[in-house]
Image (tube, rainbow, N blue to C red; front, top):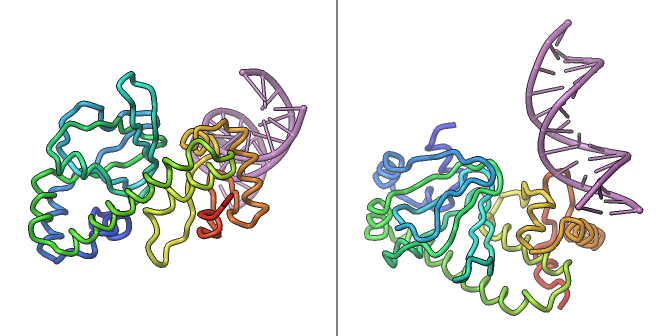
Length: 224
DNA sequence: TCATTAAATTGTT
DNA sequence: AACAATTTAATGA
């Protein structure tokens, strides 16, 4: 698949750009393949690019000062992230690790800044994304402790589906139950139980190596 | 293309 | 955590 076609389908912001802008983006973006468990960006490194997930699944682990995991964000194919560290010209505060075989796209800092300067639609996209992320963060803080495993899995799925949430796309997540357990901080066994419960409530459909989200609203209001 | 085998993922205890 | 069952992927005739 060409990079052009790839971006058309896996970067929601790309079709918003003008022809000239797209040409430069195509020239500047590089792609790298990562094996499961490979570290893509290490905490403390200077951020030099905006990161996009072309295929696979990536986790962003936010550690506290002792190095223990405090929270975790999953980024599925089509998601772009890391603009925070770019905008503030600071070192990354997160480790970025591939959860499965992943193809990562990098837009150089200069290109990112250039788009920021001249493309209004690109700015709108970023604004929307930042807003969404704040909302997720707030929701997570309140839910993380008090919820039962089913609700935590529900939150986790919402988090993964959200970046994909543009019209016409099937809400299918290529993720194993083991990975969901990792993201929701519960055991694989409990993940399995939770998914079955959610499935019997007609909120999701469980498949081999994948989960279909049938009722996003139902998931969001689960347990409330 | 089909059958066989290996690997990955899920279901159960 | 360990094990069995199931699904997918890989291999070769």
